[in-house]
Amino acid sequence: MGDCKKMEEIVNTDTLIHYARQYISEEDIESVSEVLRSDFLTQGPAVLAFEQKLAEVAGSNFAMAVSNATAALHISCLALGVTKGDLVWTSAITFVASANCALYCGADVDFVDISRESYNICADALEAKLIESKRNNRLPKVLIAVHMCGQSPDMKRIKLLSIEYGFGIIEDASHSIGAFYNGAPVGSCVYSDITVFSFHPVKIITTGEGGCVLTNSDKLANKIIRLRSHGITSDKDIFSDQPASEIWNYQQVDLGFNYRITDIQAALGLSQLKKLNAFVGKRREIAAHYDANLSRLPVQLPKEMAGTVSSYHLYPILIDDIDCHNQRAVFGMLREKGVAPNLHYIPVYLQPFYANRGFKRGYCPNAEWYFERTVSIPLHYSLTREQQDYVIMCLDDIFV
Ligand SMILES: *Cc1c(COP(=O)(O)O)cnc(C)c1O
Image (cartoon, rainbow, N blue to C red; front, side, top):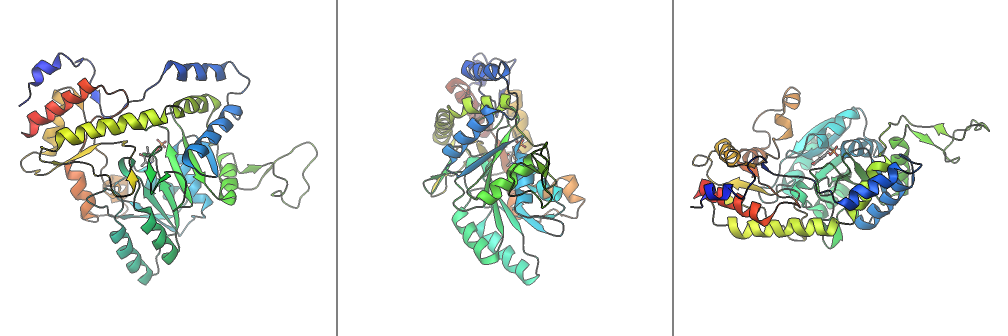
C-alpha cells in the first residue's frame, strides 16, 4: 500500500524511530545547573520541593522521592511488613522489578493472569486465585497492581477483594503518572496503601534515574522515610529508651538503605513536572492518531477501559493472526524500515530466573497469548506527526 521508500527520505535513516525517548528542554537544563551551583547536591530543598509538587499532582498526603522505582517497590513492601514466609502477588505481564521486590524481602512471589482487554491484572482471575489460596491457607500479604501501559487496573474491585481477603495493595504506577482513575489522579491512593512512580527516561517524566512512593498514611510515610535513609531517624519520639547523646541527634532504629534521590535529579523532576499535562496530552493525541489510522489493520489496539484516562506510556498493537503475520517477522520488517519497536513484556515467570524457581509455560494463558502477539510501537513526546505517519505507513505495508 504505502510507499515506504519515498518516506525514508523524511526519516533520518541514521536514527531509528524509537518506541520511547525522553524530552529535555533548555529550562530543564537550567534548573539542574542551578542546583549544581547551589549548596546542596543531595538532601536539600530541591528534593522537598519535588516531593511537595508530586503529592499535589498525585493528590496524596505524602510523597517520598527515591533513587528509582525498584527501590520504591522494595521499601514499600517492607513498610507493609512483607517478610520471610510471606507471599506477594503481581501481574504476570510487568517489568521484573514488580516481582523482584518481594524476593528482596525474603518473601515468595506468585503471578496473576491478565485481562485480554486491558492487559492489566484480571479481577476475575484474581478472585478465583484468592478463593483457591484461602482454601490452601496461602493468601498473599500484598498485591502489586501494575498500571500496564499507563492505564489503571480495576482498583475498585481489587480494593473490595483486599478487604475480603485481607491483603495490602501497592499500585505500581511506573507507567502512569498523569493518568486518572474514576476522576481522581493516579497516585491519590484511594484504593491502595501505596502508589509508586518511576522516572526512568522511557517513562512519562524523567529524573535520569528516580522514583517515588505516595501514600495517605503518616505511619507508612514515616517508615518509608526511614527505610530510604539507613533506617535512621531524628524523631525523638521514635528513639529507644537509651537517652540520645548530646552530641549526636539521630538513631538507627530499622535496617534501611541509601535509596535517596539527589537534588540534581529532583530539580530535573520538578522542571519536568511542569510539562506533565503537555506530555500526557501529546501522548494521548498520538494514541488517538494511531487509533484512527490503525483500526483497519488486523491488529488489536489498546482500549481505554471505563473510568480510566490513560497516560499512554506504551502503545502495544496485538497481531490478530500470528500464523499469517509472525511477530518476530513484524519486528524484523519494522527494524529494516528504521522503526525500533519493543516488547512489553515477556511474562515474568518465563524469565530464566523464575522458570528455575519452578514456574512452567502455560501458567498464565492470557499473559502468554498477549506476549506472543504484542508489538510496542513508537509513542513519546518528541515523536513528530511525520514520523508517526511513517510508522503507520510501514504497518500498512506489513499488514495489508
Ligand atoms: C520501569 C518500571 C519499573 C522500575 O522502574 P525503575 O525506576 O527503573 O527502577 C517497575 N515497574 C514497572 C512496571 C516499570 O515499567
